[in-house]
Length: 72
Image 1: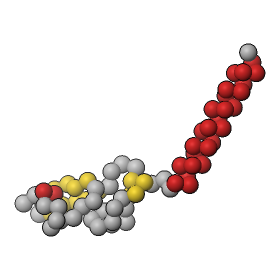
Image 2: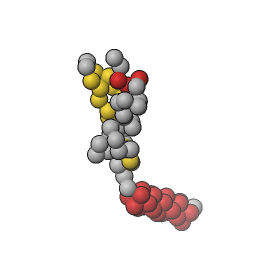
Image 3: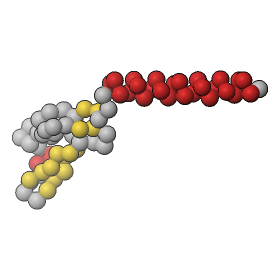
Image 4: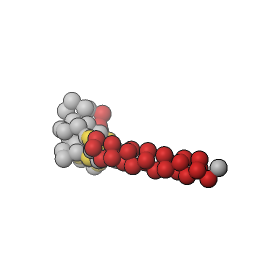
């Protein structure tokens, strides 16, 4: 029996892999879950981390543009 084909009887909210006599439920790359069988997966980076990384990247780009303008 392929448990991955029977979502109601064998829950998996991410990547289901059939094994001999059972199945494994793993998260997609870049995501995590404490219990992927029952709890939906979420991104590894929190929203705050994404905002900080975006802000730092934006400041870096602005800095590069300013240097190019000042050198011309």
